[in-house]
Length: 65
Image (cartoon, rainbow, N blue to C red; front, side):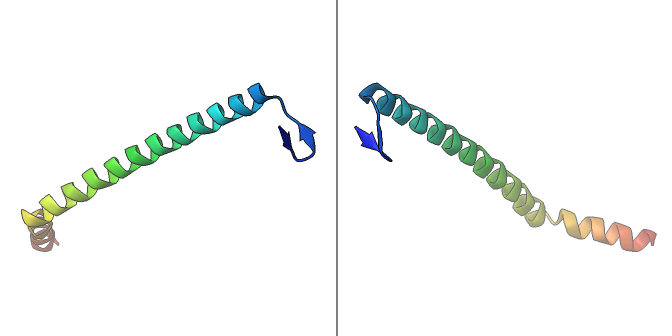
């Protein structure tokens, strides 16, 4: 197989394909972990907002100050 003017053996092309698939899989796993962390973080914020925790804290701070 010829690429960029070089003759590459088939095993090198196959090995390069495996490396690319491996790196892509690692990137996808990392992105999914980040997405999961963000979803959990925003879910916690929504629950705290529904339970009016932020209003309670704001009222306590306004009484103190």
